Image 1 (cartoon, rainbow, N blue to C red):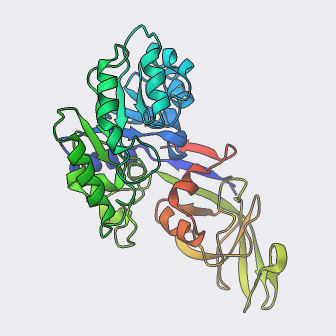
Image 2 (cartoon, helix red, strand yellow):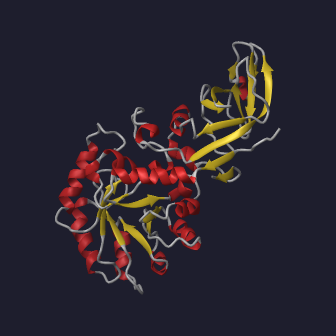
Amino acid sequence: MTLTTATAVIDRQALVDNFNRVKTFAPKAKVLAVLKANGYGHGLERIARALPQADAFGVARLDEALALRAAGVVKPIVLLEGFFTEQDLPILAVNNLQTIVHNRQQLDALTRTQLEKPLKVWLKIDTGMHRLGINPEDFDDFYQALSASDNVDPDIVLMSHLGCADDKENPVTNSQLALFEQLTASYNNEKSLANSAGSYAWPQTRYDWIRPGLILYGVSPMAAPEQSAQSLGIKPVMTLQSSLIAVRALKAGEAVGYGAAWVSSEDTTIGVIAIGYGDGYPRHAGNGTPVLVNGRRVPLVGRVSMDMITVDLGKDSRDEVGDLAILWGQGLPVEEIALHATTIPYELLCNITRRVQIEVV
């Protein structure tokens, strides 16, 4: 008997295949691969090393960018939230980091400081998502101020972010696209609008740079269930798995777990799997959430504990202690688990905790 603790298996070839698949959506565009939040839980440095064909990497914050530089990554790196303080700017210059500018405070700091060399800037316009970005009416003023500054590389990238691209029927994307085109049509700068969903579903948004994130990791960015990862031609990069650590008979009418939240309606066999919310498995996954045990689907029953979950193996079960259980990934889409847990795949992938073992294949 060999027991396996909670393990995230990272498939590098699947990642490369997904990257190549995304390239087929926009073969002429450059790719800024998004690695924020520890590479969506897959490992920041690990993912960067596995994608040397990316044209640049996108991270949220300065510490992520510096971690990549410390790991020997020399590709262009873009701070997707921009810099936070004026004191960050010399660090960006020394480490050859690029920054988004999305507010007046950043513009003022960048134009008044003294830098040894200019920074590459991506100017972000709010075209309707109303999160980050300058107001459309301020675009010309910001662009002229950046262009006049010795601290700014003259090749400014113009960008915005799509808020509803996961829904092909939502008119917001066309409205955002129209505004972005209206504002930037007379500029010859490189442009970037497409995120994962835009890269796949909205050809007009692809421009010079696409910024795929979730789709690289083998998860569909689309809202419609029929637009699954498989239908998009992408593969899961992470398979979260563990093993059965107990198998026991349960009689009809007996309960399982905290609060006696699930009671068996018939004689059955219960399996206990060594994984829980302490590993990042969603605590709110409900009864019936599928788990793969020996390749077949069985339902989660009872409440998710910190270190364990229980599944109904069925009265005719032949499963044994040590048998493999897959929580999501190969054969079981993380999107499906997210639906059962009333959350999104992003959260599940990013919530993998430090005690989960990593196996790279």
